[in-house]
Length: 261
Image 1 (cartoon, rainbow, N blue to C red):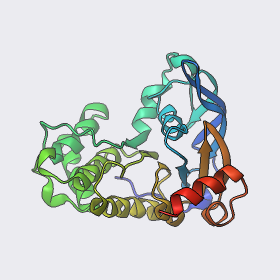
Image 2 (image 1 turned 90 degrees about the vertical axis):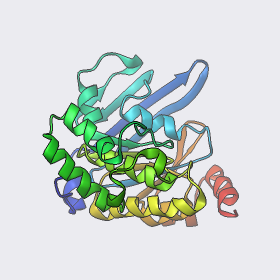
Image 3 (image 1 turned 30 degrees about the horizontal axis):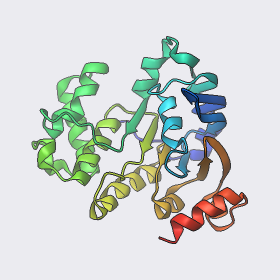
Image 4 (image 1 turned 180 degrees about the horizontal axis):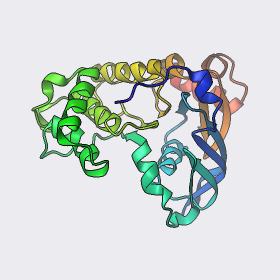
């Protein structure tokens, strides 16, 4: 895998890797995303917080076309996505450049760990098998589970499976990583090992948008924290601003509830 450029200041001088303007998303009569305006710079780590059902996951799922939107503009890595799920030749390109790690691991149960990681690079990018295997083993080593390469998902712990999912996403050499509550399905003792792998990515300069309920992790890794309430971005800023001195009353109430636990 190509080395990640550590010079964030140089990356952020370029066009934002994600740009949303006036984005609206409906599920029937439910207005899930309401005029979302958001730009994410290359090399930036953005953490999205908010109550369950606030629209956090829907927002990031729009970025790689897993959810369609009804109106507004969405540009990802210089490619435009179209509303109403209209066909866009850019969609396949975006999906090869945007990696995603879900709440559930979504591994292929009939494939060993190594094959789970090599499948997409070989099938989608046409990477030779020997190169794909070398990359897979390097990435599995990077997330601390190279010794599990010959096992099947059912033989792994939840934390190990999620780290395989992370290695699988990285094998496509993404320019942007999306995380949709990646630790919510894990037992408490397994959360730390997944967060450690994500911390390493942040240190290396990977562009990431992370939906999470892990507030301590958000404070530690984020360049910017966004609070979403009922489909609207009501506050955003540096972690110390949002967590220590939130300006919006809804942000204050949310943090008072989650931080006391």
